Image (cartoon, rainbow, N blue to C red; front, side, top):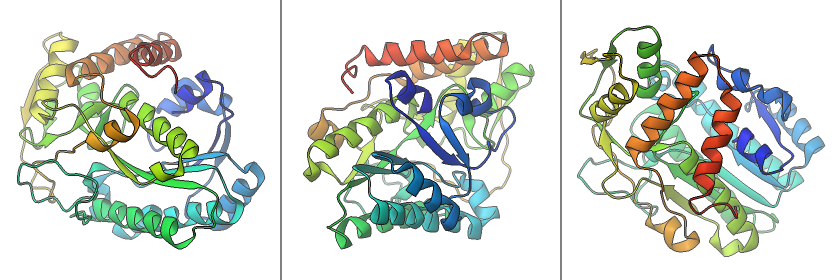
Length: 329
């Protein structure tokens, strides 16, 4: 998002913890050199509010979170503190110091997932199963409460629920694409926990352009503020095993995957989103199929692995995506 915003001429200010992985996209691209970066914890009200008061941003994209399902089981207290109180802290900054347009990025896992084969729409019940998912459901409710309770806030407030985001530069643990990348560069074998699990996988540029569409649209017309799914097109949901197949096919070099049952905590087997609302309200719809998305991941990874120009690779992806209908964002 920082690269995207800088490319289109925005002044970008970032507040976050240090990168949680080594390597990290933040360090690889040199994000600290292109934005005004403040290292801080979203739970630290005094630090966050001091920085916010100094910056007084026009647009706010709230992405700070504990974002991993399995870590949520290991550290539920920290997960709720980050994802619920962190959201309250940034919304308090908006309430006290103002901004023009605010977007809270949550997750596709906020819904009470009955795994009954239907796609979830924005009015469905919010009740995520595990601590991570449920903390994001709570974050959604907090955001809706601020939108209702403080009508004098001169700011449009929305939430966005994207599918399972994939793209080059993700090195997190317990995620399918980073696991594929680690296996590929180490000449190992990809190990999957749940190869039959269905998810709404989508390239990272899909939600990023979707988020910008929401921020701009609700700033221009406050009535468009609300909650929005950002989902793949019909037929583009796929299993984790299919993701691994696509990655192996794009990477080549005899890369293989296998399955192991690690008897871990509950994770959903089926999850799908309906993205028709954002399409109807803002004309935004998914552009890249999952096979295109995996191809972009492999291209990015090979540039990085060969010590090439990662920044230029990212800009080329942005320009290619923008040509398909989003150059005006």
